[in-house]
Image 1 (cartoon, one colour):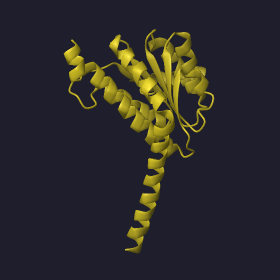
Image 2 (cartoon, rainbow, N blue to C red):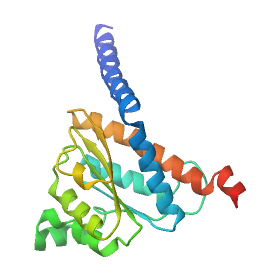
Image 3 (tube, helix red, strand yellow):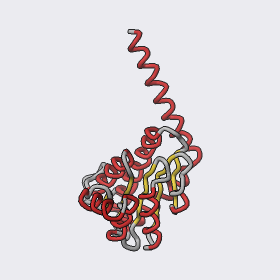
Image 4 (cartoon, rainbow, N blue to C red):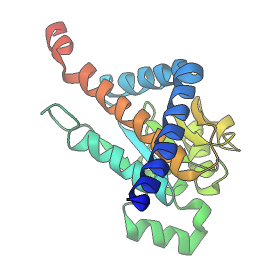
Amino acid sequence: MTRTITYEAAARAQFQAHQQMVQRIIDEQLPVVARQTEVLVACYQRGNKSIWCGNGGSAADAQHLAAEFVGRYLLDRPPLPALALHTDTSALTGIANDYGYEHAFARQAEAHLVPGDVLICMTTSGHSLSIVRAAEVARRKGCEVLGLLGRDGGIVAPLCDHALIVPAQPSFVIQEVYMVVGHFLCDQVEQAMFGPEALTDE
């Protein structure tokens, strides 16, 4: 019983820390979330796509969110085009081998991005050179760049048109907030494109 109580206390402390960080985002950065939503909805309404990039845990989150667009989130609807740049292992490893890992996403971004697309950069440190290079390509190609970033946003933040910065140190806390925001983006795009109001507008 003592062990169970200890785990309960640890769970309470960790969940409360998560709540506090989410509340801080609500208090300080909802305008950024709203603007990111507007950008992504507009992207899909004009027939463009979203491209996601991240490393490690952020790669898993990027892949998850891209899949929500291609598959579905809550509504049974047509697929929406989205791509996570680390999922093509032949391209990823070949580019990293030939050009260096810092170019692993940039070269794919060069190939896949067209004007009007949106690049979503996910990095807990804000200093991943592979993300920096991809964002530079996106900006050069006239694509908007959204950031889901951690800590102080790092060197990626200035390359983003709209960056949500989760001011936490542990990567897992940052990534947990990413997913709250990411799922909100999925929901709002889906509702704008295929929800009752969208169908009524037609």
